[in-house]
Image 1: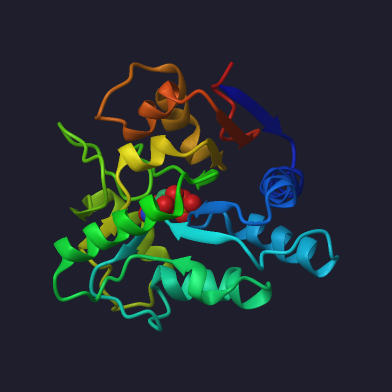
Image 2 (image 1 turned 120 degrees about the vertical axis):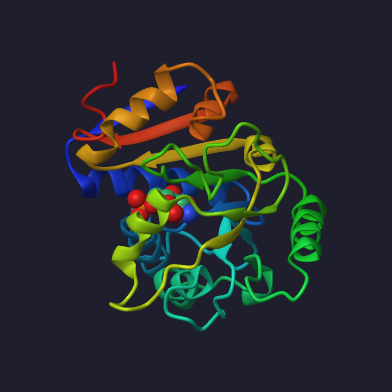
Length: 242
Ligand code: GLP
């Protein structure tokens, strides 16, 4: 595991973007695993900047997002599909037909999960999976449980997660109570993992995840088992890390 601390958010975003663009420069057809939430917004801005500077092209990449809310249409302003278009896809040359996000509107959610797993399998290995960290240690939407699912599955969101994500929703709007998420098994199969954690409120959980016991109570602790894990933290999030 490689943990790198940054004294500014701009430097962290630049470093994360450099890792991703490096992979795409080496392999223009790379398979990118993407994440949502507040944490990667600055990284996507940096990727758009790098694209505009002519440093990288996303024309041939394939992307798989970690998760999507159940019940939100792709054009809902809080769907992760909308988020990805707004923050990245609409601003770079990625081929929309090679961007993949589970459908939260599928009539048969179980079938949608299998379809998503098959697509990931058909694309081969995910070259780099970008990850944020939930306050309760979730990755994607893999919430703390006695048992974790390996493949894509439907989850009931923890109350804590709904509260944390309520900040993105308009007043009076309900945070969905379910989501479809890539499973921990799929995440761990990625060639490289890039975990990005920002803010003092994540200091304790990132310490537990990276230095505590490996337990399904803290899904991110399973990342410790991955041979190619890079963790980028700001000073605040990394304050309790060695
Ligand atoms: C969300 C997402 C995760 C994200 C995490 C942290 O619920 N499903 O993929 O990493 O919670 O989000 P944030 O970066 O906004 O703190």
